Length: 346
Image (cartoon, rainbow, N blue to C red; front, side):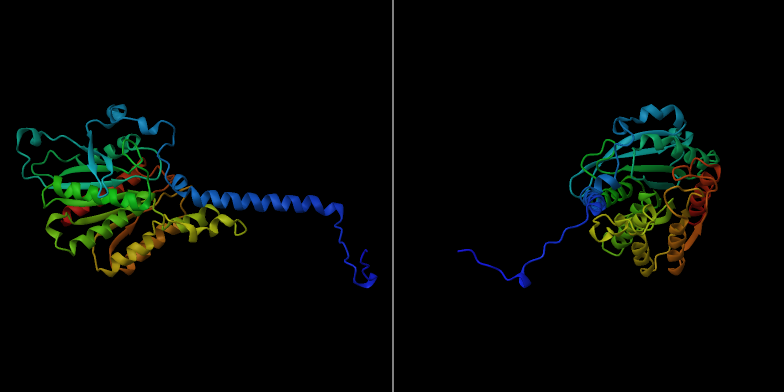
């Protein structure tokens, strides 16, 4: 027989007004969209941070495509292997000197610049700008025994003709392989400088840290010592860039830093370098009208270097966007002056 429930304990059914449904559905969709985008940003962070195929077909570009814009600098491709066996590419460029041909240039000092690119595109489009720097450096190279400058630009794994897929750990292995290549390729009295642009600035800082650590081991005689660190349009860390790109506090993306596995924390690494009492010469070169990286990042990096008693200088390239520093005469002149100062002090 049916059970009768007393009226005073009967369950009341709540009915929401019909007008509330649309806002609830909209809020639910918005939260779902936020959660989905956050998840995608976490899962695919390597694809977001490293963009070797943008613009399209950039990985198929060749040095020969830009050869006419680079003269008289000659570029060649070298293949090296990282510690994990990954094969990556180097673009190596220098100005052929008459003394090298006649054999009179044996007494020249070698100044080697390892260049680390930003997070997108490939090396060939960057070669004309790097060639302008080399041409400026060699403007007075007709003088007997003047130094010979070489730029070796690293193509990270997954970029240009290099194999593999990019990651912070992998790129650091590639940078270490480039340092080992330079130490083997050039005489032990050569002067070594690392130059990084944007994300490459983080790579350069890590390379300096690894170089100092290696110097403290038994392999010191086998590794060229880094005398200079050039940071072009640098950022302090990926975490800080999340805040810069998403300044609105109500957006969830700026709070995803606990889920990052790519950090490129130059502040932390430079602090560690400072603690080792290293004294490399440092140039911080931010773009005056940088549309991506706030000026505060360069100022913070300069402050860390000063706290560590490093010889640091910050030069803002007026009117330059993120990728225009070397294209501007002021930026190119700052790079040339920096390298010349290292040459004179060595």
